[in-house]
Image (cartoon, rainbow, N blue to C red; front, side, top):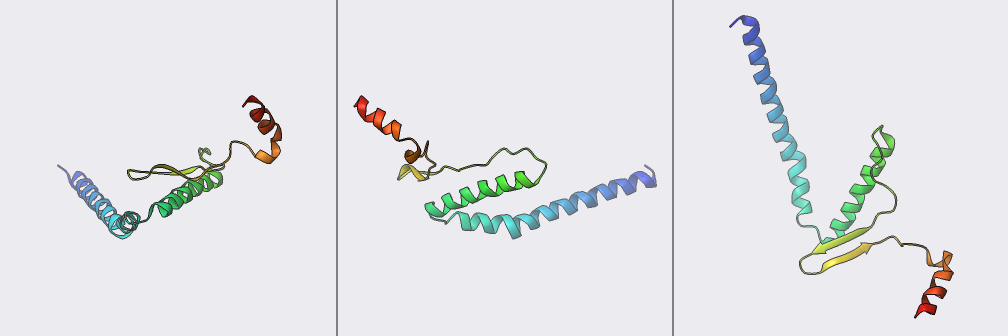
Length: 110
């Protein structure tokens, strides 16, 4: 093996070790603290956080060349063992004040 190959081998090992160290640092300083806090948040704050993350993703997609895959009004629900499925925030199917005929027709059928 020549000097050039040895240098490339050493360079690859140094680069790999550097990326491993960066990943450990990222987890220790950024990921683990967030996971620790999230693990003890009450359900209503988890729901608010989920909605915020969707809004942030939507905003990011609007200001970057990526395709917009999320956005618009957001429905938020919490599912838990104790409470089951609970709506936290739900957009309406339609605005009642803009569709009075629906209620007139609906009550005629009853």
